[in-house]
Image (cartoon, rainbow over all chains, first blue to last red; front, side, top):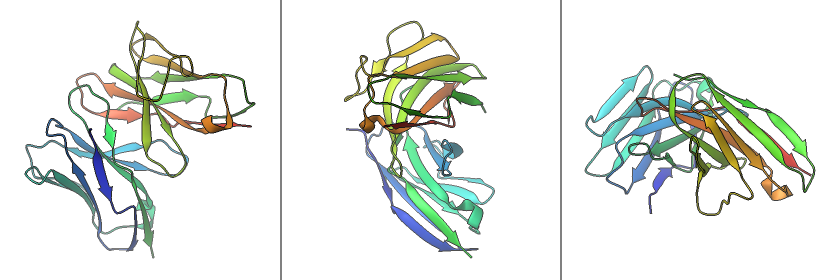
Length: 111
Length: 114
């Protein structure tokens, strides 16, 4: 069964620190790995995504690291800010198939 | 990117009634999906809305309970039929843009069944 396992379930980080969220997948057919950010009462927003042909992608303070051999990928939020406090979901899919989501990580950035 | 709108944004409904949720996308899309999200939980796929044909439902979801229409490429509706309190949830529309692979979500419809 297609699964994406996400950890930790919750994370508390000091302002200015680095937030790291990890995901692992099983299906080697997956070829697209997005991360979504969701604030309370809002729909998930596409944050950053990566293809398996690169090992890292950076957009501002957000970086995805991808390890194809280990079938793992992670989101790093540098210089975390209170405004980054949200729930983050990793996901994966291939072609036009629906996204398979991780269970989510609730991030709290405290001053 | 794409802007996806949903109507209504929230509703409180009585047990046994039905609610239809509308989803409109402002860009060309290939696929549209409907998800359900319980508070504090991840997203669960209900079905893929197929243009001009019956939706493809995931295990545990049936057409009689969640009829879906997609009359054109950018519009879809989800009906929650014969509602019970267990149907209280957030329902999210999503679209995969033409040319792929980015998938975007609407703001959600918060449904409460009393």
